[in-house]
Image (tube, rainbow, N blue to C red; front, side):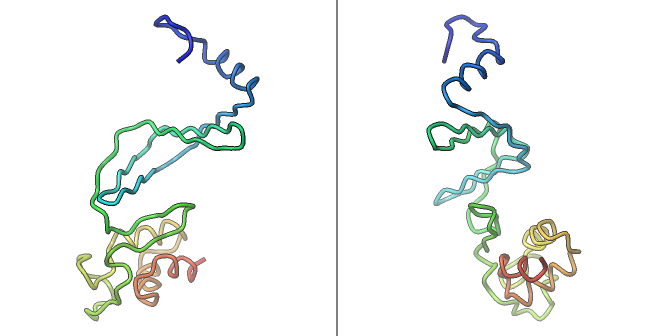
Amino acid sequence: MFGGGGGGLDPRKMQQMMKQMGIDVTEIDAEEVVVRTPDEELVFESADVQRMDAQGQQTYQIVGEPESRPRGEGSVGAGGELEGGADAGEPDSTGDNGTGSGRAGDIPDTDVEIVAGRTGASEADARDALAEADGDLAAAVEKLE
């Protein structure tokens, strides 16, 4: 971007120039980044993420290799709000309190892990909260917080 040679600018000098132009760059310690498209989710595990604040707008840069997942699995939405996937809104009709294999009608193990990780509750408590909330991730988290 700046400088023509292979060396470019010294990173400290670059940060100093950006600060003079009113651009603030912040490293974000992200554990996971999900980019959701109509057909798939691109999941970046342990990606390098930077936020650049300039002229009242925030721009995010993600560097890493994504894993592609089909849409419909339980996931975390924008702003950290939990969203249910295709199975998450369905009540548990098997009578096994969601301890099945994660097929339609059961509470998926990934949903249990999300709720347990988000709230610090045990997986058993997270599974119970999901069952009471008919698989609604956000309601289960709210119940346990």
